[in-house]
Every structure is written in C-alpha cells, then in structure tokens.
Image 1: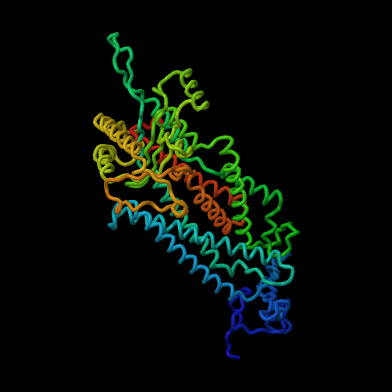
Image 2 (image 1 turned 90 degrees about the vertical axis):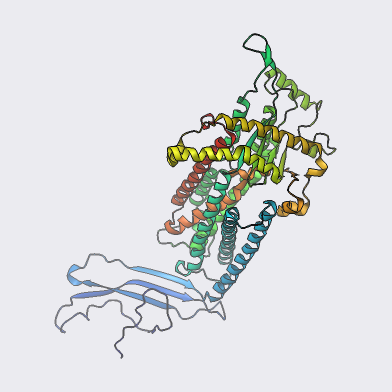
Length: 583
C-alpha cells in the first residue's frame, strides 16, 4: 500500500522485515502486456528457488513451516533462448545463535591462554639474557612469541570447532544439529585467515632466528712433528679440511625435517581422491555414501576437519615411525652428526641468544684425528670393546648416560661473551658492513667474503679461550654442570643468570638433541601447523584438493629455500669458511 518494494534483500537469508506469503506464480507472461489483446514483451520466471527447512529450538524432531525463496529473472520475449538457466537448492538449518556465543567465549579463552603462555615465555627469555632493559632484542622476541602463541591458539580452536561439527553432524542417529551454511561461518573463515597471518609471521621470524645464531668450530687437534721444507723435522700446521667437512655436514642438516611433506601430500591425495574421502565433506550426515557429484555442495567446516586431521594423522605416523623405529635402530641424523664431530676431533659452540645456546663436545679419544683408516678402525674397535673411556665431556661419571653425553644446553657468563664479541664477532660484523658499503647490498650478499688475516688470527685466540673455558667446566662439573629437574624439563625454564652473577656459566645435559631447534628439524610442529593452515586457507578459496596441495608445497619450498640460502651464508660468515666450500 505504501509503494515500497518488499523482500528485496535477495537470497535465502530471511530478515525480520520479510513479508511471507502463501501464494506465488511460476511463469508470468501477462504483466508486460500493454493491452489485453497485445502480446507480452517480457517473460518472467524464477531463476533461483531455495527451499529452507529450519529445525525448531524447543523440539529438534520438529521443524518450522518450510520457506521457499524465489528470485525472478526477466527475459525479453524476442531474445528467449531454447533453454533457460535455473537453480534449485534445499537447505536444512537451525538457529546458530547459541553456537556463536560459545564460539566467542572459546575465542576469548584461547586468547587469554595465549597471553599467559606468551608472558611465561618472555619471562624465561628475560631470565637467560642477563639484561632487564627494553631493547630491540626483547621487542623482537615479543613479536616472535606473540605470533607463535596466537597462531597456535587459533589453530587449536579451529581444530576443536571443526571436529565438533564433523562428529555431531556426521555421526548423529537422530536429529541433533544442522550444519551451518558456508555464508554463515564468516567468523570461522576469518579466524583461519588470522591464523595463517600470525603463524606465517611466527615461522618467518623463527627462520630468521635460525639464520642468525653464532657458530664456532673448536678444533682440538694438536700439531705434530713432520718433515719440513728444509728436510728436517718441524711442527706441522693443523689441517683445515676436517673443519670444512664438519661445516658441510652441519649445513646439510639445516633444512632436514622430521616428516616428509611430499609423502604427506601424496597420501592425502590418495585418500581424498582414490578412496573418495572427499565425499565426507558433503552437506549430508550420511557417512556411507562417499560419491560426490557436481550437484553436491561441500562444507568449509567439514573440508577443514577432513584435511587438517588427515594431515595430522599422516604426520604423526611418520613421527612415530622415526622416533620409535628409525632413530633407535637405523640412524638418527642429529646423533650421527655428533659422532662425526668426535671422529673429526672438533666441537661446536652454537649461541642462539647472546648468552644461551648449545655446546656439542667432539673431542676425540685418539691422539690425532688426521690419521689413517687403519688407526681409525682400531680406535672404533677399542670403543666397541669398551677398552677406552666414554666420549662424553665427563667420562668419569658413574652414570653411563652422563659419561657418554656430548650435547649440552649452555648459558655462558657475560665476561666470556664480551671477549668473544670484542675479538671476533665485532670484526666479522665490521667486515660485512664494509663489504656492503663498498660493493652494495646485493653484490655483498652474493659474493663470498674472504676473511682478512687479522680476523683469522683472532679466531685462533678465541679457540684458545674456548679450550680453557671447556677445560674449566670439565674440571669443576659440580660447580657448572646440572641436570634438569622434571619441572624444568616440562617448562624449559632457564636459570636466572642475573641472580647467579656475571662470572658463572651453566651447562645442562641435553639428552634430547635440543640443538635441533636451530634447524627445521626442531620446529616440525610449527611447519606442520603452517602446512595445514595454508592448505585449508587455499581450499577455502579453490575447493580443489589438488590445487591446495600444489600451493602448500610451493609455499614450503620457498621457506626451505630461504632457510637453506641464508643459513649457509650465516655458517660461512660466522665460521670464517668460504661459502664456496659449502657444497
């Protein structure tokens, strides 16, 4: 009566101001007639028909009266095609207000838990860095841990919510719940996008951290008498080839992973397409009919649940296979690297923070590591028959695990760090900045830097300083060496270095190869979460599993390439080994 058009919002999303009618028309060839005797000029028909069934909130076995939404399209009579396109859709839904209230509560709780985890990690970082001031290092750590905990919290929330909808929708025998339509899950898809952003930020910063740690190769080999140029005997220089070999082995470990992404994605394609598990994502509670036709629609929630849990399952199987079978009975790449250090008579000092890092003890039991194959085999035979002491830093310990342990988590004193920086690291940084100013940023990054003689001589002085440092630790294990308690192992809390003083260093036995955290091998959980989030984010746009797998593989290849390239440059720069020797 007022001349205002009604029900013009379009689609099946009913609003409170809708006017519902009981009658409708299917074809209209009358309204466009100018007179009763003239021919119609426009033909009107329903191009979209959406029939919606809404489950009642008081009794889920009953429904409200079904509603049919019609969207009409006009066609000129003279331009009518032989066939007209039309769409018919049936939707089963229910009031989702209660669920989204629960979603909001869970989101707040997740962020609150993430805040406490973030604060605890910053507290641990402050305990080990011997500096209570706000600086760029602390701001970087705040950003890194913030992205990590928020991304992980969102991921766990998405896992829980998608599992809830899959289980309660797919396994219900009687009507319990209806699945939200894709246009009703904006909060879920928005959280997925946020999760990708925050977790990508976390991985990028972690990779940067892994490409910035300090590394020092400590060669224990002693010079020995040999034939000189004049024909007499003189002390021979220690060969550098063992250091080059160790640096290459460490460089090869930079991008090793605990799981194989290629295997995971291939298995996912096999199960989704080969075994037709993609049919589980249909808007149907039937779990037996896995057929998927072009007429079937799939749910964003169900697709996320299927993809995420499949990827988690295949990754978990690989981890269990390696941890319980391959590592104990075949080979463990990190433990094998420590064995290589022993055979090379070289230790490695790895400092991920200013005062915290790892020490891998590789001092050999042989008189010389530069020896023949015969002498090397004889030494290995003696170790096998237990005719020599253990390889560890403290071979005299009564406990076998302590006597043979060669990996330590270390917290060095401030004086040692200052000498290390003053004699070596500052010179390395000055050389890098000088090359950048003279050659430009791009050229300096590509061209291998050959260290000057003064820097090489400083490396020798630092080697002697670290040898004395390790000898002091070895002579006073009760004062410097500790074994973590159960609580400390659970929460990985570092010692309070400010309270312990600036002249005391602490060594913790590292029985779990914690130094792997400096490699992609040690951040497998972060990389797996990134794979899942990227896969599901692309799937939200493409709804094509094969394309999702391709994009996920491409993203991880970029991450791996950057890690390998920048990690190699970091090893070359910090160890003074020309990058051309890192193959």
